[in-house]
Length: 292
Image 1 (cartoon, rainbow, N blue to C red):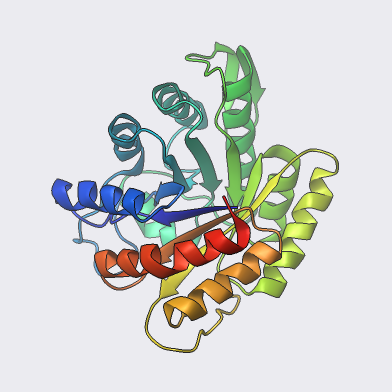
Image 2: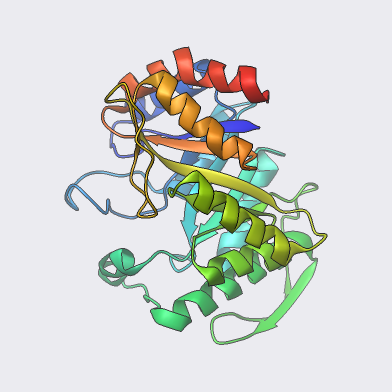
């Protein structure tokens, strides 16, 4: 099992971002992750945020061993073929270390898309566009030439380059029935955000059912808050796991026992304070129980 953390991305201070990378490495995390937003969804739109894929390219050159990825790339922010090329570039710079997790976003993302002049797909179109994006990215990472023609992607004998020797895995994130089906049938992995262990186990089983004999990794991501002695499990709304470091470690262990092969945490509150506690207590506890 691997343990990852989202970085201190809500900043315009490069030194703080760089320091968060170093702290994550020193704390023993296996992977570091970035959100894919052009402005923060909470706390006011004037808050700074680093763009994810340019930041990933930077991380590919400034780190050596740790995994890097997006949690998650929004399917509607870039043309899927362009996204695939970006992913291939980063994978060439950081071979074997990149994971491309893709999600559709939701209604909370509408104003962000519209402010930047990008289409927002609602209802069934949002799922159909996600499916087209995932198919395009997977095919462009694995095939020499790609032809597609649907409502969202039109490519005619597009030659793909670069072509990484080891294409990065593509995950799909989302708890909807449609997102789970797309993950199971098209992707290399699935990420469930928030929810409780029982719901995670149920959704993971459904993903693997769609995958049949094809290997698909099931992973969990969510908020954590080190605010008290007794862990409070989140409901399906995606609330934070709240409690002492020992309590959080116990709660995270439940997702690993339910089959998660990668746990990705997002600290609430001041990032630097949380990561110290994570590295001192939570990561070693999970390592001892599940290895890496």
